[in-house]
Image 1 (cartoon, helix red, strand yellow):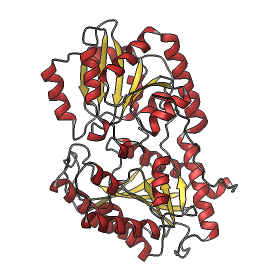
Image 2: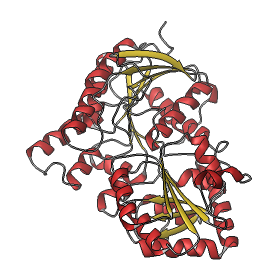
Image 3: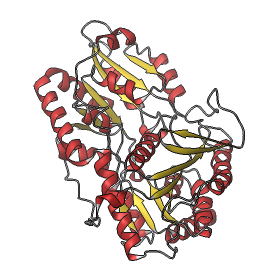
Image 4: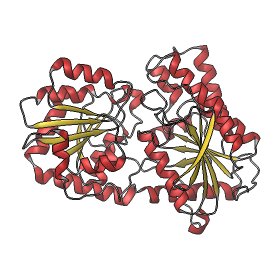
Length: 443
């Protein structure tokens, strides 16, 4: 595939006093949050940590941890509402109907959080900004409506085009129900003071959905450049993974969902079954069990599956790898994706092998940070693996370019700082119909 340039995202860059980025108050409403593992959890946990580090008052309303296993994590009470201080933020967790996969159970999961989140928001202090993560309309709409009734400013973060996605994959046929969902989505977005896009493709789609340029803000995925950094290999990693002497490690760390199309890794493993290559897939998700069954059926002894681990452990594993993997399924609806799996790899100074045809693959190519292969093409992925092994000098150069790109463009502190500047401008011009009240945290 060609290496198309990644267009710069056009956002307002405003000169404001950096001190204004502290002393504000925020409430984040999200169904997904650490200690769960996943791209959204890492992104939102990083945003909260940076807001706290700047001296802001931050509260979080989220679900009892249950993703991606579909069960409330052991050790957590099932009380409807519980709160504790976590890393400087007040985190209020509400009960949800825990489920994974698709179908009625997952719909109940989304609906239950939407209803219960209002209990959490009602118990939180009346912050100046309410940040609503929009993974589903069921989960986001109640939070937006309740926050607007309290006359709080609302910023909606949009990482995925949920209504478009459920139509594309055939979950709901395009008809009267979808038309109703689109109207509700448009109304919700229109009520927000700010709407934040995580990718350029999502931004463009939001503008077509009626979001104004005055509302639009930008906060893509980033990386923790201190945690994920180049460093010496930990010799115990290979022993822990049971690697044979001389095996080359290739790591995928993240959710094993339908969108990721991880069958391509198994196809590549089939191609490389007689070569000194080991694929390590770390994480959980709706497709993990079927992937494990498929690997077993094929007799793939060069694939290791591991349960989700903390980010620090992923960083330790990466230092023992030849390259990191990012995969995205083929399809028009997925072309707006920037797989977050590439960012820790790039930040660690390792090359990326990106199987996909989307915004993320174009970014990797434009940054010179790795090799891009056709989505779903196991033979093409295997070819890239062989190239990384055969040319360590090229692999090192690609890894160095990726690290340089992250340092220049995608450290969390830089990204959140730019985002706060955009919100500051929206405050200063009085965007939206929300009255400015209680800018400091309520006592």
